[in-house]
Image (cartoon, rainbow, N blue to C red; front, side, top):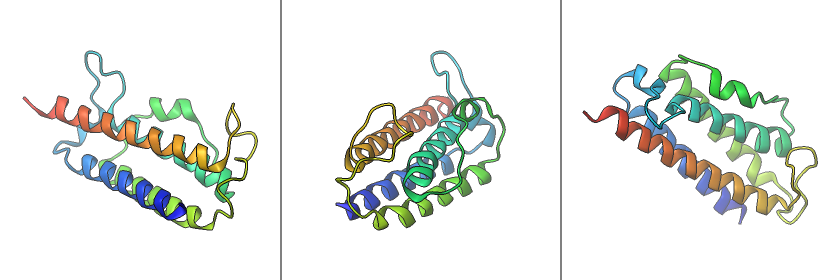
Length: 146
């Protein structure tokens, strides 16, 4: 099961990286218009913050401190830096998930409002990643097609 989580987190982070690379103009990553309230870049920062918090800090005991509001407020980080952060997060997740002792254990306290097993919380995190990766795809197609 841990191998499946590792595989799918890597898959969606690869997809996210691919989507970011498809933006020809770096400024397009930051566009918001109409009903699109979050830029693709801010969604990327949100995904990275989420995984660094819930997998890195909670399960890997990193010193990451999340500022969720900032994930949606920061502007104009370069495309290259976004890609580097995605790659770093992919490596972080791949380093931590295989070393989880038991997916049936309770997720560490203080990270979620609800309780659950590590397995259930990883399912939530994977769904969250897939959902926002789809939003980035939609954003890219919406803002780059004339």
